[in-house]
Image 1 (cartoon, helix red, strand yellow):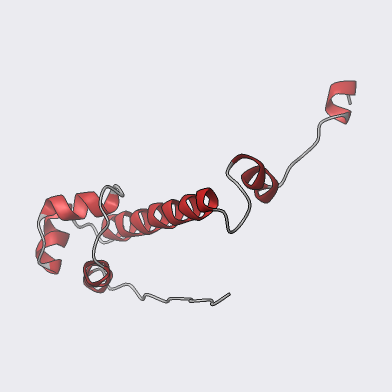
Image 2 (tube, helix red, strand yellow):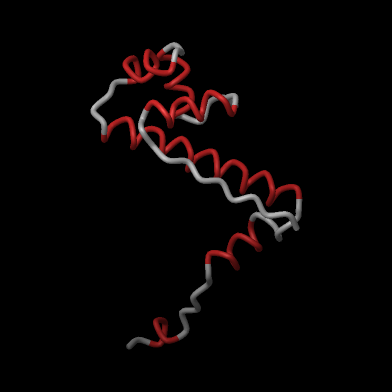
Amino acid sequence: MSTAAKKLKLYSLEEVTDKYIGKHGTAKRDAFEQELKIELLSGAIKKARQERNLTQQQLGELVGVQKAQISKLENSVTDARFETILKVFKALGATVNFNVQMG
């Protein structure tokens, strides 16, 4: 092993996030985590739709919204109503579980 490799320090994701985004409970960290959750939700919608071989248009028709709304949901462009998100998952035959933790 080279000297440079021996001196390489590894950091956890938590350490890097704390350093560059902020500690838990800060406004910047809360905003970052909210955005991350929206990205994950958007990805889940798109993946489920594609696995069921549905177009955005077809999913929109099942849910009762325009194709543009499905596109916005999948691309995290809009803050969708909770009711719409639940309708999307229902149309996809997905089970939705929520975990609410009070601090």
